[in-house]
Length: 165
Image (tube, rainbow, N blue to C red; front, side, top):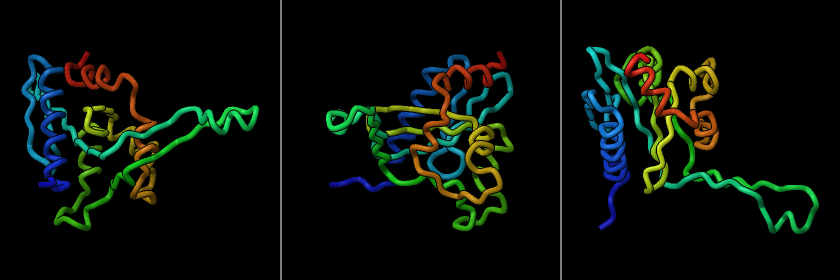
């Protein structure tokens, strides 16, 4: 029997929770489910909120050797899979403020779980808001555009915020 999208998202959210619990010793890591803001990390009475988003497949990029054999110039291929990330969904829910705006106001983070191998990327909601959203004209963004702005050392930056290093 095939699992629904919500069940698959729940599995990935629980994996993200285990990952966060393992990487934040001395903290209380709480998973609130797939509705609302998903995770919170509590350290010394300070809470850091995280929203986890997931997509089915990883983004592939690299040198297109077949096309390079036909030409002297390097060719890069990009396969942006699994659609778009939706920032603005408040018209679907009875909220006055969007979930994204809540996360920005709380200095929270997005964590992105890509594929089934637990590839996790992260970025501060404020940074993503400034880079991509600006004045909210752009309400949906291709996954590849979101992930290209994620910190390579996002976990270190998140730890610095949580532990106030």
